[in-house]
Image 1 (cartoon, rainbow, N blue to C red):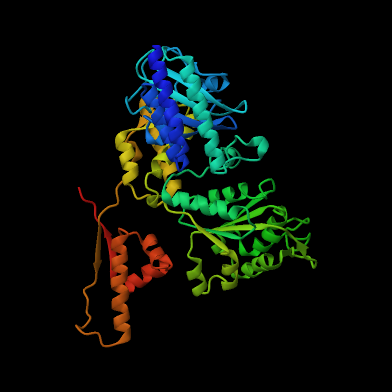
Image 2 (cartoon, rainbow, N blue to C red):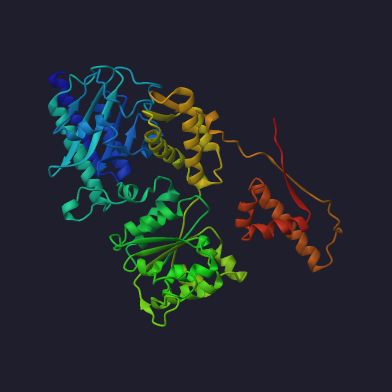
Length: 524
């Protein structure tokens, strides 16, 4: 590279340094950084990643498939990235390097295996501590050989400063001695310890993260609401991890699995001989969680008799083990979750109003996947990266028709359904194509059937032209409202019941009485 070209690249980077200072948010700042790098260096793909606990998290990408943002690159699984992170400065790989490329099959400029190509990485240091990595790839072999060390050093310094500034501006730094590490949203602490991470860039997920950040530092009781499979337990874990209680236990209890006869003992403990089979004193879940948090999943399933005792704990912080006269004080933060409409449960006498108000000090609603825009592709990348390790596949990727199928599907089972769909599809694809090379998952292997057209039918109306009594008028209104809601939900009774704030079984019985039926039609 000539001296003139070097000076030109240096000028481009200095100009963008001033531009970055005016960027309003991290997403904008990172994107401008990558754009400036592509102006200075001709390349097909560039990625900025943050490092924490030996895992690289993509923060911004250009030239790579969207699902790359959802992937998490463990250094132990990716020797090329590990080598870059061990380097004291910019590192150029030989064009014919035999180390597996983590972006194999993910470049937008090429489908299939990467040929001999150029690849280099810039480790990003702040105060002599590695905080991230910048990777640059070109499909043209030896494309980076002529780039001066001065240009690369300036680029690394600019990228590291941008990354550090972003962490500080969004308060994504820990204490002073760990100031360069990402906090829970951008790190893998929750993933490594609890098996999950909140992934998504949609407005709905950003709003949820903001609410979580706001309430996590308090001791407020939180009720996490949402449909089955949206990730309510993951929200509870994130709340605990971001709270001052994060070093104390987070005790999980599924209230739906508790027999009424044993629920009290499970929650509050019991004394020896309190009932048949109680051979020794046993602490309950609240005592185990003392000083930490307790997650009451499916809290709407608790029997009314237990609800009264739970209310006492929320009011006074006192528990009374079964078979003991003495009460014990506990200091526990309660996080509850439900997929029921508890307000409706209160109205119908199945849930205590006073307990409902105690639980909803700060309610959080987890959005369904169908309301999260392109988050489905980020989640797909995350699950594919996990599945590739489990199945021993070098690289799993989505074919274009598969990505479109994922975006078009309604996801009644939400994130849990997406994970299972991709796991099955990956296994089928590996069986057909082998596990050594890049395995592409196509739409046929996903086996996603678009929602069938719904025909709504009812018995012929026998109502007179003018309604003359209240019952007839009420039945007519209910019938029309149910028909309209079923039409809007594509015949999905569960979703219709949620929108109408009715129990599903009660809604179907009412519909039958009103002469409403739903028929699925298969159109060839």
